Length: 156
Length: 151
Image (cartoon, rainbow over all chains, first blue to last red; front, side, top):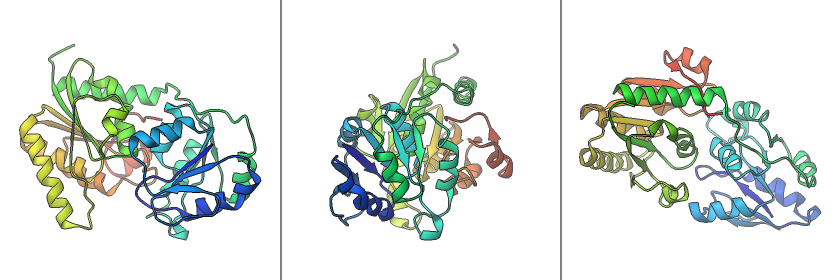
């Protein structure tokens, strides 16, 4: 199963159009969390999923397709799933600014995170059966931040 | 390890909450209560001490008033020594009310803001004792500090 999610704040129809256009070339069900009421041919979609249901879908998926949200990247690492992200574009009215382009540039170098910009690139990757799962690497940046917070609390 | 502190850790649902969950090692040895806006989320992360705040957005004064009411209620009830938040607007409110009640307050701006500080973060700068950005260049441009990042 392919699970697609675009978060809860803003819809991202371009991503679901892309998935719908390639769905028939794939021998796999596609489930989407869309943040809107629109539907697409060959996709099973939900406007919103409870955290519990979201976790179930995420964990039973072979691969995750998503916008370039930090929450989704962290979920993919948590449940060790390959993640394909299509960043939202400000010029198409898909977000308030272009921060997802910057996020995509940054997270694209992480293990198991793939960045695409259109349906064609997405279709090519979805046909690959052995994508690398995302995994959380212990980074110096993270332990620095945790140490800072720990010291802030002790000094309070 | 020094004195055991009472911490209120605040994050709205989604990416903000996920980032807060990356930092929980820092709370070890202290009493911590989590506050979020999305029902079912704490359980999904194995968190047992939690409360809910009413979510809001800056386009609705009514939603902000409701949110602030829930923040004041929870803060007065819990009386934390420390309030930390990764976002968003309810987090800023919790830092303000927490500071008035005598807590030390820390804002950690979301790593999603790779180009500029979030609007909530810009507000938080005026109310929190300390503000961190997870990007060096964003921290420098906003006269805040960089102390690491979750990714």
